[in-house]
Length: 589
Image 1 (cartoon, rainbow, N blue to C red):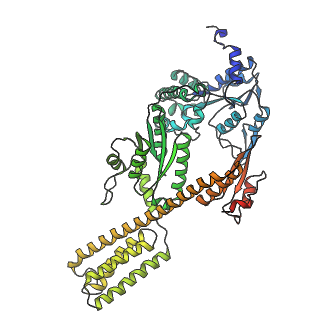
Image 2: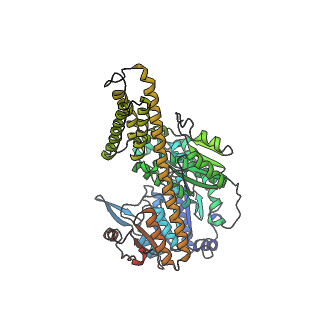
Image 3: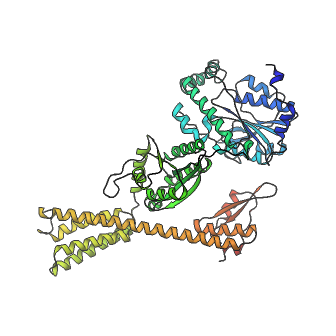
């Protein structure tokens, strides 16, 4: 076939790039590959030259410096935007100049490496965020990315290659592209290019051949890339308005701070896309949530953000039995499939079954998918160990010892009055229950259970002031400890549940109050101020809300929890632009 026959019609290409009749904003085209070296940048530069020949204003915003002369030669004849220099830890880094690109405002901008992480101090953390701002400004963008950088495929690619990449792109960015062009190359040809030194040189090439670049790995990645491109057609803006088939599936995952939860989220996102179904991420807040470590809380926030990026709807339920909450939510919301991480079987009197067994009993119609993870068991043991490490409180210790002292004095009076030892035992059990109610944490009530048995044995059994002297009391001591321990455990659980119910009632009251006040608010500023005030009450945190001005810039407004909050100075340091003052009327009822 002649070169002229392959060349697209210039008028059609011009209309496509200019996006005259399309939706507002620029269009994104992604040159998609399954590995480095398949020719993504080369194909992008070739397409740029064709667009320029068709009369399109084309600028190379940033092209990753390559050691491939044939690729860099294609920059000749294209206007190249100067890079900006960013100094980080004494090292000068060349980065894409976003402000320069916005000021130049070409019809088509080339920005290589969609998954790149910007240097510290840049306006955006990731390059795909730079590209999103360019698209909002009406600039069409060509970019490149490899399959291993897609967020939902991170675990799949890592299981194939043994390498987990840190630079990842949310799937919604990939799916929002107006066009995805697969840059394909036979894996055998790619390996030959690597051996010839056309991709990497020296030791780097040898290391790539020994690890990532094997024929089996490349063939698997190629298949994944082709399948993912086919899936992207379902959400492409090119087919906006067309009816897409829906299978009616609704997939649910449970959010947690476990390290394995990210793999569960990505798996569920792929399933939702494959079934063309809805995707919901549910967080069940139990009474133990308040005692979670900051590391677990940070991971939970990361997992919520990951689920949102992969298209999940976030929901929250409250209760101490996750299985009941999940089953009830699934029944109300029409969930058809639940994806869970593997959880070890719990053993004991009160919880003999794990979450999967409970869900099978409570919701037998649900399809349950268990995602294995080799690190799950170890991470859960570490998490339980961290949660069991309660902070020592002298105040709670004094309460425990004080109540045990009162029980001992009461027992001495009972013995003096001739009451049977069973009455003294009941007095100590009552004391353990009281300790569980007035102290924080289970360790004090457990310690009280053990101490009450030892004190009773030492002071109230013959011969006095000795331990375990009468074997006939061994059964009595055992029963006394079990009753005291179970009683304290139930009391602690009821106290936590009461606190959880109180927090839930407070949140519900705030939301109801917000709904009533919003119905009376008039004007966007009044609605914004009211919403911020209600969020202050709900979260007990200072807020910064960004509003988009007519010129497209974001204008921050500070909403402190109270007028006395001294955070204006810190706010001014973070935001160099002038900030708005919060009206005093905001803090009225």
